[in-house]
Amino acid sequence: MSFDPPRLPEFLDAAIAAARRGAGILESWRARFSIREKARADLVTEADQASQDAIKADLLGRFPDHLFLGEEESVGKSIESTRPAPGAPPTWVVDPLDGTSNYVHDVPTYCVSIGLWADARPVLGVILDPRQNELFAAATGLGATLNGKPMRVSQVATVRDAMIATGFPSAYLKQRRNLDVWARVSAEAQSLRRNGSTALSLAYVAAGRFDGYWAFDNWAWDVTAGVVLVAEAGGTLTCADGSPFDPFRPDSLVTNGRIHKELLTLVTS
Image (tube, rainbow, N blue to C red; front, side, top):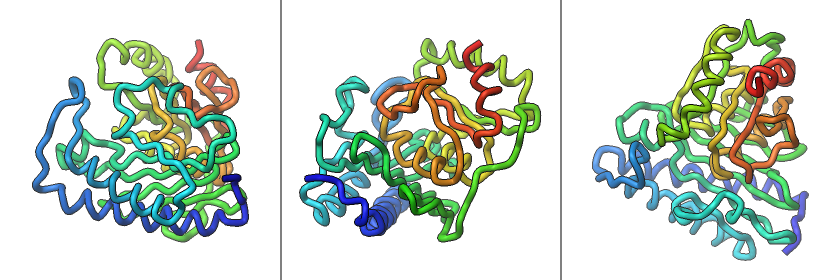
């Protein structure tokens, strides 16, 4: 099945409806889930799977010719192996619960993230924060919105005046590289944040709350929705080394555009 860009509004409406259903399930489970360990400090709950199952049923029920890539069914795979094949049908890329550790500890910073990959690029993104009742949505050429109102990246022009976010992997040995960058950026930036949700960090860049974000260990379902938000809100996206952005690489650098070159230098020093 080929991608039909005029159908983007239809796809966006479907993604919003699916996100609302998934978020409703998360909230219904919040007080009664049990926890199991995928890895140290990398928690997963029954809520993850229930949310993903509902989202998948909604989207593939409406678009049976599409494909689905969800976090909970990709455990154990390499990042590159999750990339849709060239010429594949439009593929929904879904994190049913981004910010699982926050959710487990009842920290109100988590979300449902739904992106659409088509024609070898991200074309649609919906991120729903059920605790703040914030819906971030965008599609290529249609702009980006927060609760239905247009949003734009910030106008901050220097890292010195910027609030920068990052994300850390759960495994300590993988954190060490990012800790070195954290030290460099913290010496220059106005402030740094680690909120525990990659998708919300990207949504906050798109909304002008954060001025930039970098990370080295993300997966496609962490970023596919958020990067569409940032692009449509006027931001800049690359991999962390400055090469063209690719959600099927683990590293990313996302900014309002004005501080991109400066932050890139700090991240790659």
